[in-house]
Amino acid sequence: MIKELPACPVETTLSLISSRWTVLIIRELLTGTKRFNELKRSINNISQKVLTSNLRNLEENGLIERTVYAEVPPRVEYSLTETGLSLKSILDAMWDWGINYKKSYEEDNA
Image: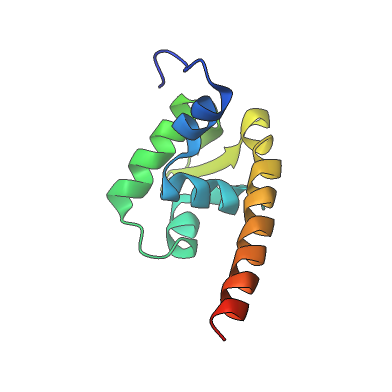
């Protein structure tokens, strides 16, 4: 968990979602609740250790919630909190920017 938030709001946001993996986990959870293996399959090249670490950080920072069901075998699901869901507009803006950049790049390199 972040011990002290930076004075700059942009820096605060970056301190929470600056990892490539964090943004991709949030992207996947924007479509709904997922189990660990669903996340691992949908995010290319992420190791189990890195996924676990990022999920713990997201939970500590209040962006996701982890629900454990008392079943055998145990079932664990991850979903975005209201705070996590509020990042949708940021990811939408990143999506739009990426589309425009790719289009410009392809036109410049055609």
